[in-house]
Amino acid sequence: MQAFGVIAGIMLLGLISLSGFQLVPESVVGDGVTIDRAAVGTRPNATTRKPNTQVTTTQSVQKEARIDTLGVHDVEQQTATLRGSVTLGETAPDRIFFVYGYESTAVARVLRGGVSYGQLVAGLPASVSVKSVTRIPNRSGEVSVRVGGLAPDTNYQVQMCIEVSGMTTCAAPVPFTTVVGARIPGQVDTPTIRLQSVQFQTADEVTLGGTVNFRDTNDGRVYVLYGESRQLVEQAMQQDYQAIRESDEQLQKARLAVQARGTVSVEKTIGDLEPATNHYYALCASYDGLIDGVVCSRVQSFATHDDDFGETPYVQTLAVTSLGDQAILAGEVSMHPFRNGQVFFVYGTDTNRVARLGGETSLEHIRQSGDRLQRLVVDTDLDQSDTYIARISDLLPDTSYAARLCVEYENQNDRYRDALFVACGEVQTFTTS
Image (cartoon, rainbow, N blue to C red):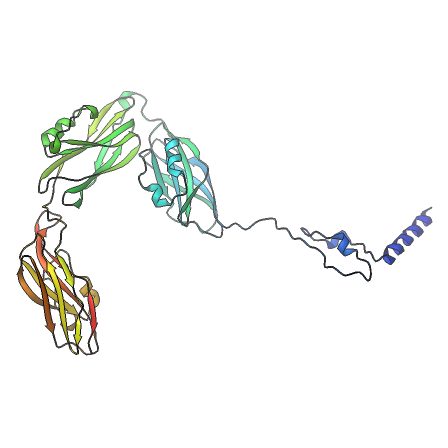
């Protein structure tokens, strides 16, 4: 029987060979390659076809970074370490940052829609904060940032985000809860307030602001009191916000944040103030929690500038006419509200130095330096407007020059003192022959 089986096998192989078919061992078929058996087993004299091969890869190309929000570490009453993982791709992120807050709906509202980082941070509510990773990693792995100013015993939500080509993408949120602070009223630390410097936007417009740390309190309201009456501002500091009655320019109030906790920074720009007038203000915060109350900063003051603050005369430098080693300079000046202007041309081979002229300085402080810079006074007492033409000579041949028309005038500086300023028209360049 065994001999019969061997003979039958030999006969079967012979028939397959005569039919033009081949047996392909499994060892010659690579991983991920599919062999078309019909194409391999072609008959003689038939049209030969190439094997139909299909290669499949086990991992697709990662073009952009992938991110995940990891669990928060080292959580304390007011601090925590936010963590996330980054899997870098072909396109590196422009920025990596964390968005966190104690109102999940507010966080979701901030992250809604494809926006840039700049749009995201503009006008953040008091309940949401952003912290950037200082350095973009050059390899995949974990990143983390330490944040402060959190509120004790508060539920937070954090999401890791990246910005790529002006668009923000965020990972899924992760919750965490800060450590309990005060447990009885006697242990409560009440809010502290730190004021920022007054910033003048125009003569009658200023920006006031500061930072409030609510510490062991919560659901606070931050507001500013201001006006021309110090007495009314001080009286309002002893009242609840709703009870404060405004009194035209003497007393005004403006709410800056509500339902605040932790540390919040606020600003308020106030306009239409009386010029050259003393104003008084205080930043206040009302708070709830184990104890309720109101705390305010000390009363501060600032004086608005004169109407002319920030204004400058109008100066225009006209095109220069080059005449060999001479040139004709021209321009016009309108003093607007100013008087007693000193009008002068500046010119020289040092184009950068000519271009830098202007600001709080005087004509005499503009030092002459040979061919590099020269002054030419054309009017010492301009009160309104005038046009000026001047011819200059003894210029270097085949040399590039720059020229400007300027005027010296008196105005009030940031320190409320009268000072000399120089305003200049645009730079005009010319080349001698």
